[in-house]
Structure formats: structure tokens, C-alpha cells
Length: 69
Image (cartoon, rainbow, N blue to C red; front, side):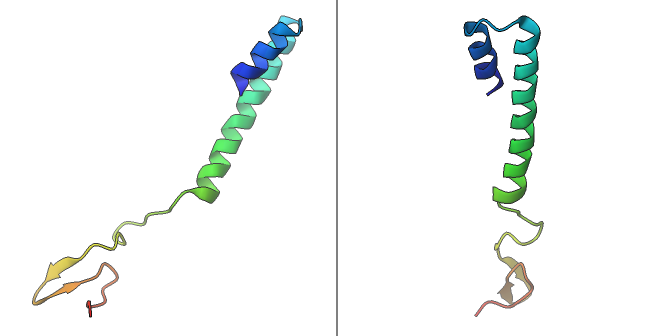
């Protein structure tokens, strides 16, 4: 997004300082949007809850500690 803003500013004949400011603003928006994406749309995996089974004693036990049925 930042590169597109810089390219559009250069082709439009905007001054170099304005081009850099537009590029920096676009970069900052991209950084914030990426962080929001990771906060709201990624799967949170907690340690020990992968759904795999562990062999303990005589039977398989789920990661939640519940015996399998």
C-alpha cells in the first residue's frame, strides 16, 4: 500500500516531501491494520490444548484431562 501511494504521488507530479508523507501514512495504516488482523482473525492456540492424546497409565487421556470414550 505504501509503494502504491508513493508511485501514485510520483506519477501525479506531487512534490517529494508530500510523496514521502503519503508513503509513511500508508505504511503506518498497514502496520496497524496487520496488527488488528492478527488480533481478531487468527486462531489462538494455547499450549497443551492441541487436541492430541497422551498415553498415561492404562488409557488415552485428552489434552483437557478428560478420559476418551
